[in-house]
Length: 147
Image (cartoon, rainbow, N blue to C red):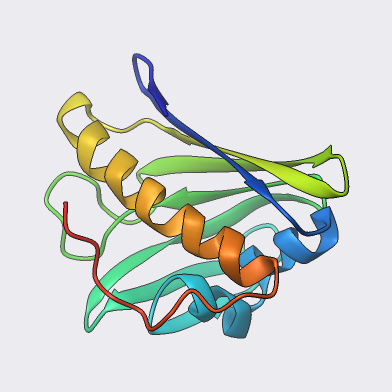
């Protein structure tokens, strides 16, 4: 994990194809296997990105870029959050081939400095769950991360 001036970056190696890993960001049922209790995802530019992480703790934004199996981007924020409001930050995810699997690189831009630690902790909690789910494993029931 690296936190630069305004970027939180996370990397995770996943034992699954780029196509499979990408689908865990665009298919609501797959999203809920690693993150959230409910999801509405409209995987097209301008389409809705909405995930209820924990009984009303909702992240929301819009997809801004989709390059199937290589890269996607969406705006991001929290409903009812005084600083990181819906759509106020950007998340870019790249899916690079790595042997028979995928190297996922997630970059979260435009976060206020005092929000880096919380968001870094959140992504570092959820991305290993994604790696487990995308590789065919069971990440276990959804639990709220302790940060």
